[in-house]
Each structure stands twice: as structure tokens, then as C-alpha cells.
Image (cartoon, rainbow, N blue to C red; front, top):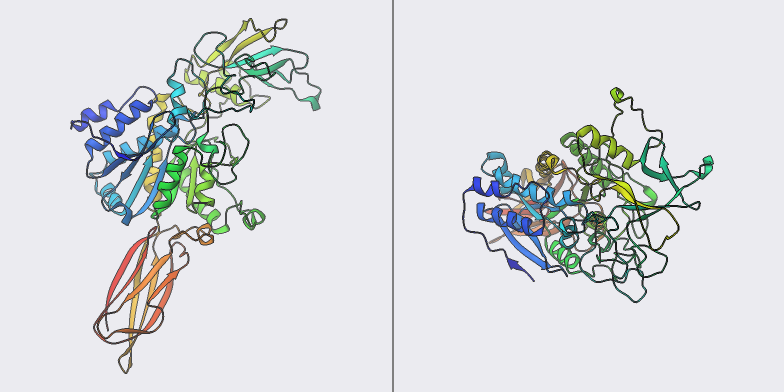
Amino acid sequence: MRKTLTALALCSLPFALAAQSPADYSNHQQQSRRIQAIQAAYPGLVQVKSITKTSGGKDIWMLTIGTSPASAKSAIAVIGGVEGHHLLGSELALGFAEKLLAGSKSDSISRLLSNTTFYVFPNMSPDASEQYFSKLRYERQGNATITDDDRDGKNNEDGFDDLDNNGKITLMRVESPMGEYKTHPDDARVLIKADLSKGEKGQYLLYTEGTDNDKDSRFNEDGEGGIWFNRNLTHNYPPFVPGSGEFAVSELETRALLDQLYELFNVYAVVSFGTNNNLSVPFTYNAAAASQKLTNGYQEADAKINASVSDLYNKTVTLKDAPKTTPTGGDLLSWAYYHYARYSFSTPGWAVPKAKPDTAKKEKAFSVEDASANYLRWAAQQGITNTFTDWKPVSHPDFPDQKVEVGGLDPYVLINPPYKLVQPIVDQHTNFLVKLAGYQPTLELLNVKTEKLGNGLTRVTLDLTNKGLLATHTKMGERNYFTKRITVKVNTSGNQSVVSGKSKQLLPTLEGNSSQTLNWLIKGSGKLRIEAACPTSGNSGIDINL
């Protein structure tokens, strides 16, 4: 289902901006109101529609930003909510739209929106992200589709249980000589795996908070939360894995996004916000992987572009200590490159900074690196409180004769910053996207020469130039049949005819800052028009007098 979003009653821009400045992350209803405010404030620059509803009944919004006609300009797709527990991703996508349009009266942004279209999908996982705002808070990635994750013929029969009644799901540790975990030597609140090679012994079994409701000796393996958007796409789709779905693109939102993007031939890059990361740390070229029949590695030229864009990102965005990641399959980052054949970039947007020891408190560097221990030290240094639940004994029906405690870090905190830090992160990523648009491929016909040869013949020579830093297509795009190539047409009229050369030809990828010389032998006289066009790279035309 597709529908146009009805705008709110017109209101002043200051009021609209004030209304869209929440004190915490926005739920789906609040996101929808912010989108309505954008459309009301910038009706000439924004088109909004719902491309589908999820199985939970929530709209998947699409914002088309730029001057009309949108499809005639090179475009970037910006996608948030790729993972339901990564709330920052939706804030970055929606915040980008808000900040970009707020600056649309400036000359630079006005020119940008005249030359580039942005397709913004703020939240692809609204069913999952709502869990943050629910009475019981836990990290969820699946939509509202009912699933049987443990394949026992029952649905959602073994979910989380709030054993300490604090409204959030943390961890549960059970004292056991069979345990694999021990306390961190520098912070006893944190559990780490015992290193058997060093003779260490474990003290605890570690689970997520809950009980074995279906008595299959597993905990919380089949609760609410169905299919993960970022596990349901087609490249390296992982079958029979919880969250991946019965088949690739099984969900309304995944199908709707892919259908929409496949119709948008002008998109040259996809920027997504999620835990996958090839922006602060770019992918590298692997000849063996890139040469496989079913390619699973970046082509060399595309890897160089990834490195160049990563350099731009690191000069624009302060993102330290973000880990290098390897996509696990069915993910958007991989699909956008390997199957959609566009430049594909992803970033978490934020990572917990490496906390230096406070010498005034006689802290020392950690003897064992651990994300939870690092977060707790960083949070204490920043004055951030109430993000850790102290370990508390509970009575547990599955461990009647053992000591069971519930506690640990709050859900969401390792991948989502406190909301007070979000706006500067949005500002930096908006600047990055604006600069990335400055890299876009742009065609131009230059250096036209004509040479009279007699008998009504004229040799026409020119250079087709890509003025942008990005190639007109990825190298991966040369391997498929649906990526639109560069089309060069010689439009003859009257007594004109093309004697040598092609009157219409398709050209392969034109690298950034490069040219290709073309020539024709034309018979006749008068005005001749030559045009070059490519959806990802724009159009250029020139009139020649024979």
C-alpha cells in the first residue's frame, strides 16, 4: 500500500522545529509527527509517502527531498532503522532530513537540492524499535510477524521474563562449577569468559533474564519479535537462522524497500545507519573473494572508492573506536552493493569511546579489554548514571538449589548514546552526506572539434567527461543487466546522417575525473545535437554547427 502523507495544518517554522526537538529517542508516532512537520514546512522540496505497512501495522515512510523532477537527478538513498535496537540510526536519517531542509534557503544547499535528490527512509524496523518505549524494555530486532524460532510447533512460547520487576531485561548469572564465566579482574560487576588455556576456571553460567517456559533446557529462545529486517535480504541470505524468515525478502517492509529502490535508477549510493561499518574502517580488496563466480568481495576499483569515502567520513565525523565489522548475511549493506550494485556505505554513527584510566582515582588500564567494563568506566567519567542494574539474588524455578542473580548493563546503551549527545552526531553526519553528494558522478561533453572533409562530410570529435570523484557506476554494476549505462545519442535532422560511428551507443563505467574520446563522421549540414545521459550521472547535451 502506498499513500501520500497528509500534512498537518500549516504552522510557523519555529514552532515546527520546537515541536520536533524531543528529549529522548522518538517512537514511531513521534517520528510520523516529525515527518508531517517537515512536509508542512517545505512542501516544494519534500514528497512523503508510505511504501507499505509492517505486519504490526506501522507505516514505512519515504521522503523524497529535492527539486522536481526528482528522478532526473543523481540520488543518494539514506536509510535508518536497519536494526531495530539501533535507535540512533533512525535519528540520524530523520535528523539529516530536518537539518538539510532547515538550511535549504542557503545558496549552497539550494544548489545541492537542485542537483541531487535524497531518498530518505527513516525507520525500516518500527515494530522492533517500539520495544524501547514499551513497559518491558529489551533489545529487539524482529518485526511483529509471528515466528517459531525454535521450530517446536509453538509460537512465542519462551520469551523474556522480568524476574526483578524493574521493567527491563538484563542478564542472569547462575553459580555453577560448570560455568564458563568469571568476574572481570578490574570490575567485579562485569562477567568475562574464563580463559582455559591460562588455567582459569569459570564460576557462572550466563543467560539473558528469564525462565525456561517451554522446558526445553533453553532460555528465551522463542519470544516476541519475528523477522529481522537486516537478516532478510538476498545477499548471503542465512536460511534456518532465527530472525531470517522462511525465505529472503519475506516481509512487507523488505519487499517494499527493494521494489522501490529497483525502480530508482538514479540512485548512485546507499548510506545506511546500523552496526555494520565500512565508513570509519573501509573494506579492503580481496582478489580471491572478488573473483569468485558468486562474488563475495569488493571489486578493486570499488574498494578504492570505499577507502576514499572513508577518508572523507573520518575527516568529517568524530567516530573513534568503532569496531571493524563483517556482515553476517541478509544485510542491507551487502545487498546494496552486491545485488543493487550501488556504492554502499554503513556506519553505526557512534561507539562508546575508549575510556582512559583516571589516575586521580588510581585507576589502571584494563588487564582484559571488555566492552561492558569500558562502558561503565566511560559512563562514570561522563556522569551517566542509572544504566547498570546491580546484581540481585532471585528465586528461580529452573535452578532451585543454586544461587541466581539478575543484573548487568541496561539494554541499548552499548550502541546508542545518551540522547543529549545525539544532535552533534546528527550535525556531523549531515555534513558528511552533503560532502558525499559533492563527489557524485557528473557527465559533461567537452572539447568539441569539427573537421570538414569535403563532399559534405564532417568529422566530429569530443570528450565525454565525468567531472565527479565517483565513477558513473560501480564495477559490480558492470556485472548485471539492470544497471542503466551511459547512453550517447547523435540526434540528426534534415539531410544529416551518421556515416561512421554509432548514432546511439551504450558505454561502460566512466571513472571519476576521467574522459573518453568519441568521434563520428557526419554527412550533411546544419545544427547537430549530441546528448549523453545516465540516471546516476545526469545529462549533458551540446549543439554543433556542421
